[in-house]
Length: 145
Image (cartoon, rainbow, N blue to C red):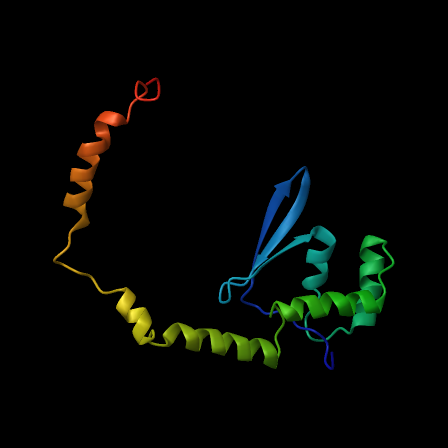
């Protein structure tokens, strides 16, 4: 990671109580990715402001939570968030633009053919007739025979 990590500002974070502990679910509304975090990890991702380096983040984490976190561990966590496109960088921007482009594309001919409605065949009437035929056999006494 060349520059200090910066968390994307459009992510949605929701706190949930599970088994008496607070768990945070972070959602990317544009890509639909989810990530569940405990409270210390949630605190750590909100320290990703684009100014602090991994060694500084590890020191702040140690001061706040009393857990000896190495800069390599912070880098591994940053890489995981980068794989989910949760950080502001060129990879995330490229994936976001690619996803929005895919949503705007016109479906293929095969995809459009699957959505053709045939007005000559109305399955409602046919299903009503078939249902009337098997309805007498659909009761508990049929299984006794």
